[in-house]
Length: 426
Ligand code: 5AD
Ligand code: SF4
Image (cartoon, rainbow, N blue to C red; front, side, top):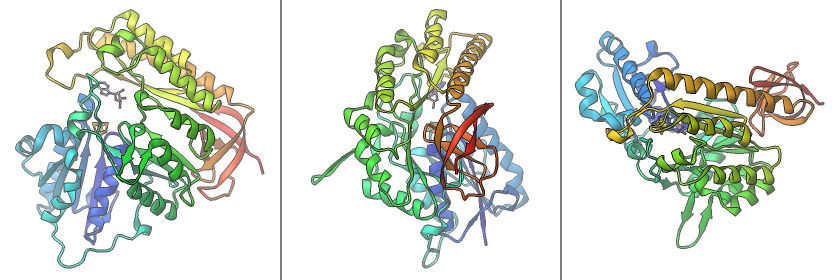
């Protein structure tokens, strides 16, 4: 049996795309291998959100030169966001051993590229529901389901709209069928994915479906105990969402809501479309709908023009919003626009990043400590650990002996690093 090895960089959207790509190979009788040495074909699914992500993808491709030379009949597929940005000509120019390049906008053409290199005669191997990976990216009981692709916003710093194209929404039947297939294969937690997932809206002449409707319908899929979503944008919350969030307990009490900056001046320059006060208002509404909900966020430090005063507004937003966690990034220029060149040097960028990370950590510890003494519902990912609805990892004091996917109740007894400790309540 031929084998394919898939290397994925970047976000969950890329993880979900890699899963799709693996189906294309499995339909041709391939097996997915975790070991590059065993593989006949390799796919590198690339990211370009920051320069460093692109550099990583490029150096990974470079490392495949030797692998290909060892057995020239091996095939190299470069796909995803950096492939879209750089283009086939540039990639094949620099790495002549690459066989196929497919950019993120043409993810549906990956199958045709695989077909060019491995044509199937006659019928494809049936890819049955049971052979679909339940992903395993995060846990054996968690599955990603793409609800939308691309982004129609125009944040000044972001390359995603240009490499992934404008927002397109998948038909609800497809989304729900995938959720049902994955639940039947063992998934208990579905994560609906999209660059601005809560912009989801689907209209046909007969019916209209909102993001809130999609959440509720996904929650109703047999076998599903929890529905998460990533990532929403502050601009697209509506009353329907808050109603669904309040009323449907299967919607996870957790919202990852990227803010990027706490300064109104910088938010405006970034073209985020909201102010600090408006962001805080949404966080307040999330907590009003579900008092125990956790909110996490993303920050960019060192955006062109960010003064010390602007940066301090980001620092103070951490405590004021009460975010449980934040991914913090140094600004990376993604266009040739001279007006968007970084103004801070590397040491100053690094210094701001460190200060922000320290603030986030302090805040996270406070929030974790506040959970001590509570009784939490935990979805087990192994016999020994699981996750609360608010996305906190709980390590149990003893192996429960229960299967992954079980919903248990645990008393929170302490914290350890970024996780909670808990005791099973029989
Ligand atoms: N520089 C730094 N960080 C960026 N992000 C997106 N574009 C850039 C950039 N040019 C961050 C944002 C986003 C996350 C996925 O990556 O914080 O929310
Ligand atoms: Fe990277 Fe953005 Fe593409 Fe995800 S969508 S892989 S974060 S560039």
